[in-house]
Structures are given as C-alpha cells and as structure tokens.
Image (tube, rainbow, N blue to C red; front, side):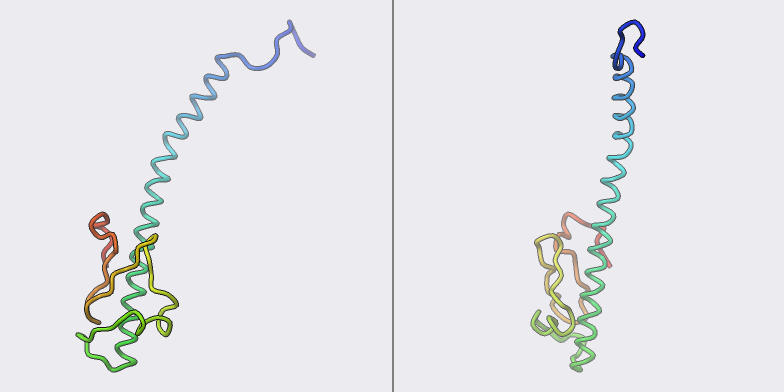
Amino acid sequence: MIKNGSRGFSLIEIMIVVAIIGLLAAIAIPNYMKSRETARRNSCIANMKQLREAIHVWAIDTGAASNATFTTSDIVPNFLKDWPKEGTVAYPIPSNASEIPVCPNSAANTDHVL
C-alpha cells in the first residue's frame, strides 16, 4: 500500500548510498593495487629461484664448472618446461652457472631480487 503517492527513494537516500559506495571504493582500490604488485613481485622472485635451481641442476648433471656458460637450449626442455618470462619479456640468460638471475625489468623493479 502506497501512502501519499510517494514511491522510490529520495535524493538524500540515493546520495548517502553513493557516498558509502565511494568510501568503500576509496578504501578497497589502493589495497587491491598493493596486493597486485606484491603478487607480481612474488611471482618474479619465484621465477628467478626456479631458473637458478634449473641452472644448478644442469651444472650438476653435466659436470659443468661453476663458471660454465650455457644456452637456453641446454636448460629447456630437460630442466625447465619453458624459459620464464615476466609479462612478455623473457628473463635474461645469466653469463655463467654461478651468476644469480635478475628480473627482466630490474630497472623498474628494484625489489625483485633473490
């Protein structure tokens, strides 16, 4: 039953709902961006660890010295399914087996280190 012919929400009620949604968005969006960057950093570090371990296993299996050089074909597909990438950029090939892999975007991502 409708009283006095009023239906729907008043302008004040709609403005309050919009303000509450805006406040929640202002809280949630920065947290989402921070968690997204943290996930990207953790993924990059995990890729570098996987690459380092595959190179070490290759060196052990082949009896190579710690300063031995290698190519991606030495590592892929026997020790890694595919050479890791961050986005579309492949990780650079370390100059020897003892060198620590680096992030392909190391200039922009200074906290992506092993």
